[in-house]
Length: 418
Image 1 (spheres, rainbow, N blue to C red):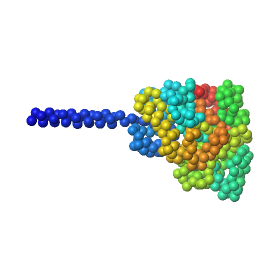
Image 2: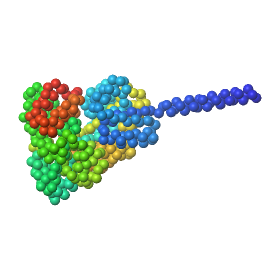
Image 3: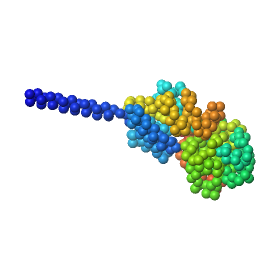
Image 4: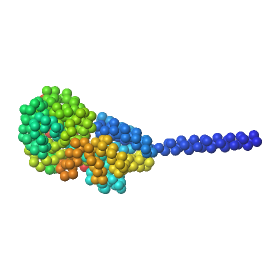
């Protein structure tokens, strides 16, 4: 009996041990999905989503953000052989990183629902996170309160129209009706790149700057956009110290009606919505003398996910499942459209865009009124030219000096692969 008892005890011990090992192995199978987020405006939303998604799916999501440029950060990750499973990057990064590092997503069901996916050599590599656009943000309530007249953004097409309305606002008591951001990406990418985008062939225009056949200081598009920029600069609420302007302060003033206009994009809503914002706000094209462009916002697919092609098959599948969740599941769509206040790039997502800036972008996109954004500027373009633009904003150089510094930049810079 004693021997049988010992044998039984040993058997039970082995069963318990095997069960424990089996349980440990099962737990170890839970997939980790690392996500790089390059949109700082939605970092907190991404982190909250990660917790909820991890609880309801058999994955552990970890979301990361870096203040470095996307290209620099991704280069560091690949140099250390430590890739993210899923990375949100800019369009140009899909062209530069995709051929070597991105998984082919051609067969994924969401591909049929969008016109904004990025393909390289016949392979779909980039998943469009959203549609974004740039233009002039306006507070219609503030304008109407001061002027006593209904505001129709379509009535402000030219720089002269813009100046006339600003003069009317000043006469009505709004001392400084505009706001400008000092950030290099706002000046050196979002505003400056309109000069390229508002040419029929941006590549040819840039090539002309490089070889000297285009004199930027004499270019009609450059001067038209700078005329409008000057109106905003001269009427900027921080015109006496423009490089001390805090972005959130400018967004608060627009939201609450202390100023009427700000150059920016629909991504600004993530910050504006935190304030006591006016009900009637929206976006309109940058007013200029450029008749083919002053009825359109500049934009398109913005930020793209790609899946690393070296991580495990389980991680790749988890990333695919996550992307399909965003497009096809009700809670995924809700996360994109309402939680993150993004304009979706997929035809099957019919949730109304609730924020007024996003709604403006969607209305322009639905009518084909978006000028394509130029995605192929070099990685250092906005930083270096942003510094030049900051000098111009602060009155340290004039327009000719700004044109000269941009021309000097292009003497050695090369556009990205596309």
